Image (tube, rainbow, N blue to C red; front, top):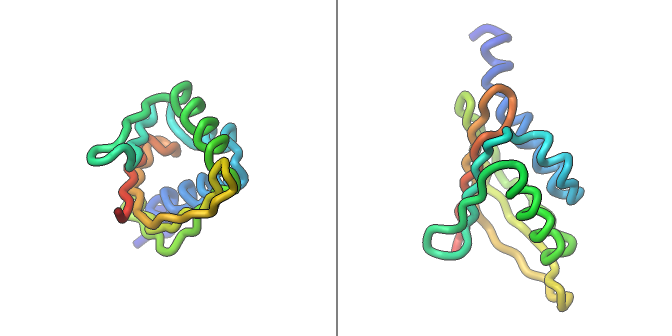
Length: 127
């Protein structure tokens, strides 16, 4: 496998790691800089199918609301691997709600990358 091909295979992982770092800083602008204009995010809630958020404008509102309601949210990557322009992350998410109660959940995300940006993120949670 050529170094160029290997670099392309690793690009989705690098992008998702950068996205996760921005998430943990609660840097919505930093997160949005890594997603396409038409990015699709499928949240794990509400059950059973979750909510679909599409495009940077709606993602901006979603993430601002999320961080406002989930102070100190921090995503720990437990495992990450890439499959070409896809990346799979197994994670645990810790947060503190408005009442100061700490909680956590574990799950996995499947990302797709197009032209150097995240264009899909599908989240699944152990429930």
